[in-house]
Length: 184
Image 1 (tube, rainbow, N blue to C red):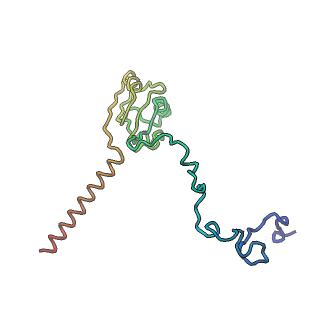
Image 2: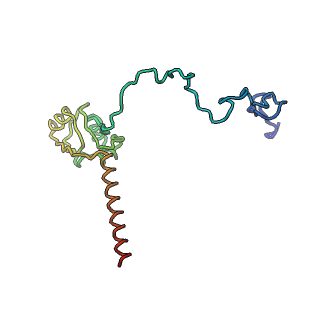
Image 3: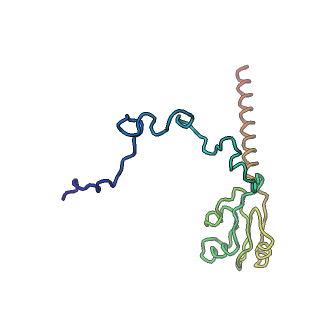
């Protein structure tokens, strides 16, 4: 036996049915679609249609909502921070902020900053500069001799809107400068 003689067992790989290729194929003429009507044509999307009856997805009640003003914080527990300090991944003498926690790999996401939660024990004296802190976490940090500075973080949507406004102002200023140059 040679490598070029190796084949699959007969019938192991079945080819796809090529519809609409003549009457001898068994699926010729209408190609298995029956005759006439919307479903015999291409580009049909009536999967949820129930003949005019109110469809199931509209009969069921709506549940919950998405709060468009919700803040997206990366939540980090005190226990996780203490583990990082014990493992020498996080410097206890330096200021701990969103960038430091992100570099250490505990603050995932959090477009609006990081929020410290009180789960776990904290023994190290640390100074934090974060967007939010729970009451229990603040008490635990201060008990260990640390300090917390809560900063006001601009929401991502407001940040984008402010950037858009500055770009618009810059474009308007460029336009005015071009008009003044054209007149002169």
